[in-house]
Length: 554
Image 1 (cartoon, rainbow, N blue to C red):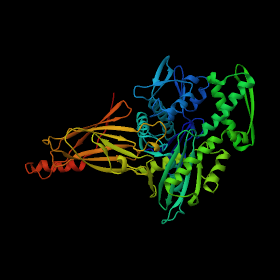
Image 2 (cartoon, rainbow, N blue to C red):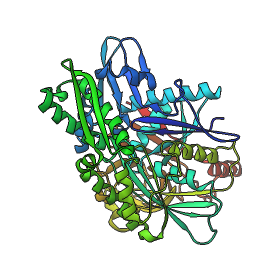
Image 3 (cartoon, rainbow, N blue to C red):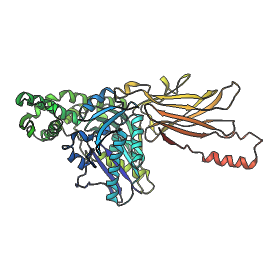
Image 4 (cartoon, rainbow, N blue to C red):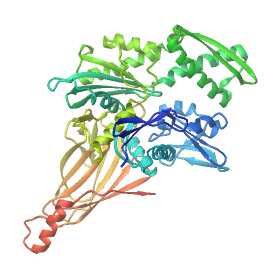
């Protein structure tokens, strides 16, 4: 049985597997530990990973990358405009309000959804893993950003299932990082917590979490983020600077040429890395466009001045994480800095000022999430024996539920699960209804969400209820925030009635699918007209009732 962890980054993917001697990161066909998250559609075949990245220059309008940014999001989200502008591809709004990506393949133009593209990437990673392990791969744990909404989490699961994977858990990136940090340490006290801040500055986003460690366990105290701040934004600062400079100096408009944009962005990314180790760096590109060679030069000081606005934004999620955890900077024992965008010297300087201590780089910045995912998979798998270690993660958002009669409130404002609720969690609601009734799940606190996110989650219809001659029937609804961080209605039952069936329709907003969930109602044991044999059968059924789910695609 496979024990695999996948870190699907915006730019690169990392695969980690659990073996008897520990956690290993797999090499791809080019012997690299990172595989580009790129798919290129050629005339007769697809090129994925490293091959897709190598073919991107020849087929810029048939190459899709950064698919993680589009999955489960609306086409008309304010932030989507910026993301779509960075791709030289034709896109449109799908019937469900999502993004459709138009690509030429086999001499035809096809409209792909982000879930379809992501499933292709998952399938490629699955094939790579099976080739290395020489065994089938199903079970896995996948890292996701803490800001992923309910819809995005479901879309990830759909893509993984299409690829033939069976995700045991979707785990937050920073939680996976904290796990890979804490499980190997044996110097934590059994009484009293050690607080560590984890700051992950990725290619497209920034995530922060505060974790409390004790011997044999870890608990996440807060998750914060900036969904639109990452290493690519620093690349874009350099790109804009040199695009304007080359327009004045060489009279060329880089924005008008897709290949020129790709080449300049690639050169700016390399330039950023050079500036991380050197006070100044040149930029030289041969035949950028119109058969013109271009040259540029920039100092680290000038770069930091151009990126000053971005640097200021990094401090906001850090301060918010401390506030939500109820801690001050002095209580943080260590600040672990990871992610592809974390190597900029100015970032370390900023964090040193904020946390009153220099950030640590004990973890592998590119591999820590995948390693944490593989560790979590080993802990959930019956095949491997892992020492007892408890991982307590929390939700990034609040979840509420409303009915035809108004909000259903366990807490204030219809909140069922507040922000910071342990994952997984369950709540039981007692309702009184006369017939079919609707329940709608929503995010009650919109300020917790990424900008432009719809507060609606899903809609449920529960019924029919038995005839009660105008009297209300008491219904017990069991709601769940599961291991993936997904909100759902686990079951709906009534008592003192014969066994019947409730059809509960479930619909994502927006989505193209329905979920029909049959729910058996327990038999009241007080009914004396029932035969002893049937009574025994019903007792067995009661013990073995399980929720079954089926997805019917329109």
